[in-house]
Length: 215
Image (cartoon, rainbow, N blue to C red; front, side, top):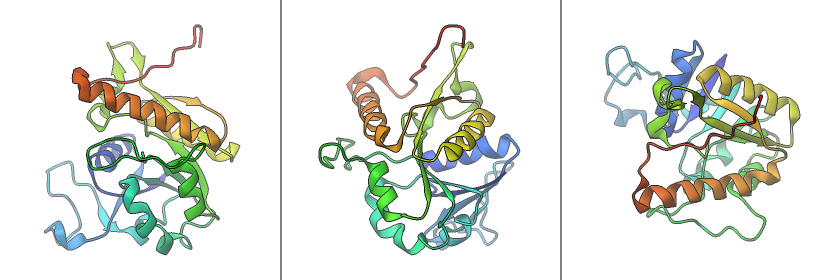
């Protein structure tokens, strides 16, 4: 599958490595390629040579993941609205300030809803926002060698949800459909709780596992 990732930070890079290992064709969209210092747009770490391209090139993916800071989306996304029209856009963002404290978006509102407003013609799916980048490895996603980390998925587009679920499963997650995009507010609350527990001393080697008996 052709996967575009907007944002080359820790989450975007971790998802790119998982997707590449799973056999997907991955491009990471960056605002300033010249900051990489590599003529070929690759990251220069041996066999971890991820392709870095412009955001516009990454937006051409079959599925496009948003791994930008939420606070950057209002500026970064409007120029991409046209190339992302009709595309499955996976919002992995969380509304947090620089100190990781939650940003208040208003009752019932969410980063997912705001992304959908910025990209009104895209098929927006909320996913991967409840997972720390530190455990986005094949070993990290398997908790205690038994249960896979849950990837909660919410969207108003059922077909897009199913396709993102299949993609998440290919990366090593256990996908769990969570309903409509309005559930993004609850998924972001889960992420805020995860961050709060990490800052309280729990660390980031932690993950949510939603286990259904017999499932």
